[in-house]
Length: 298
Image 1 (cartoon, helix red, strand yellow):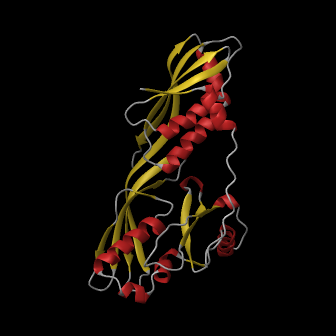
Image 2 (cartoon, helix red, strand yellow):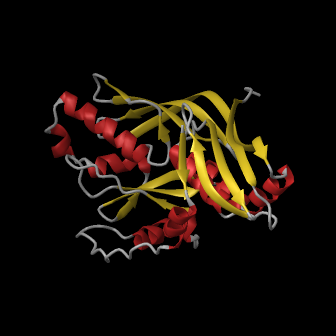
Image 3 (cartoon, helix red, strand yellow):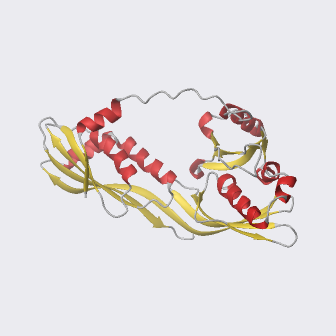
């Protein structure tokens, strides 16, 4: 199946300015990103670049209070790593934040099933704010008032393009403070981008390579963003486009099982921006693929 985008549609999408959003007034009690940044700098005792601090704002709702805000810092290839949670305007260690956001009276008012639900929501929205959950968390109560949460996750690894699957087991005390976290890494992968010829008619392969290389940064960013959103990213995108008198005309995605449409549209923008030798015309079909390979345990 072909989905085509003509030059006019792309030109409009790429040149029309985004409407300016109306300035929003902060709700009472909401801590600004600027204030969060100041709190993290206070934690580390030094200035940090704006891009080095990660902020998430989950809508937890009741029974949680204090508008919890998970906060992370960028740590190389691992990306954002949780370092604290802002509750009621104070930056708390992750192990202490649940007790502040779910006070004793509110906790005691919950049924057993409601406590399970609350711990699942906290795990997914706060503990794993910067990690990709792989299925729902399992919550088990103990007779001594402790609770054990087991969650499978995908997360970034130590090297560029690496990811790992792990099972995390978190034990919470009766006071809703985190006692311990243990993990079992069950798999590691290396994910890379490859680009190759599929079909060509009337255009030299070297000309296509040059056109794509000129916009390689955009292509790589498309891939990087898609992988960051889904560490299990795999498969390929096949694009077909026409060239007339050195200019790209219609660009189409050849949809196949598992084609990532958003990623295809991103790649197509780079393709549309390519230029070819004056007078050249023809048809190009190219593969933009993702290679996700299991890594050895070594």
